[in-house]
Length: 289
Image 1 (cartoon, rainbow, N blue to C red):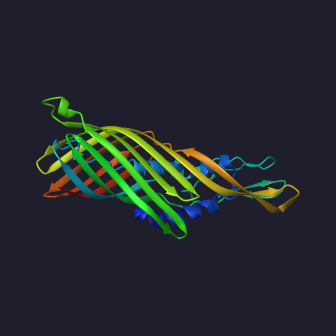
Image 2: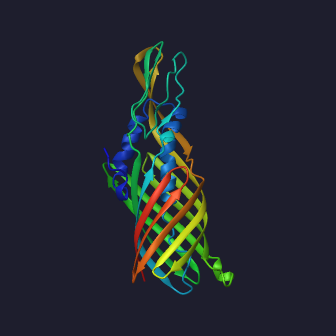
Image 3: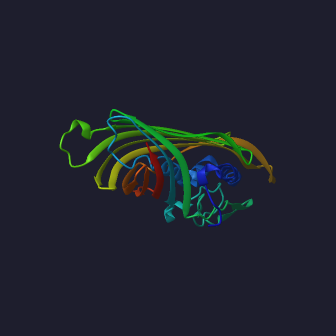
């Protein structure tokens, strides 16, 4: 790929600085369309990899893991239909954040030019997480303290709560649990992303191998601040800068997860596929105690 994105979040600072630069000449309506696929990706990532087993220990349990994933960007998320200024002739769709070349439109003041995208179809991400369980209830924690990367301060916090349902229903052939998950990711003065998810998941063990799957509802709120440069109506060669804020909601609402995990003593290796607005392939290493 041309750019390695989101690896354990340490590429996020320069990435979002680049995003802000690309929005300088877009109105709030157009900028919302431009970043909506990115909002979906953030929701897909943060709401993934939150479980590998519905069998929550009845006594105490603790785990430390690293989750990595790759998110597939569909063609429909690589472009959008812009809203050209009055008098301009719309000719074709233009690139979204994930697209390639931006379009341009002819009008009374010359050409209205739209920014290119980053030309990506596959986005890697990753983060650490820990869990602790007691009496059939598990708490999940994800945390990245505020760090400065390329002059951008970034931070992350996530928390989840799972509870065993099957412990109340004897003789079930599978383990069942319910989970609620909340994540927040911030790039100071640029971006604030909040995600919430609710799921029911099930699993069944076959010796060292555990098969698992689940159905999830989720929502992503994506709040972005950027500087908009507007042409001076008295002199089209001069731009007036204005600070704009926009809110976009990701398209991710429902997803289905199917995966498997292999346990070797204290080590577990898992992989799964998450099918929704954007498909995510996730994997992880977990040390359980």
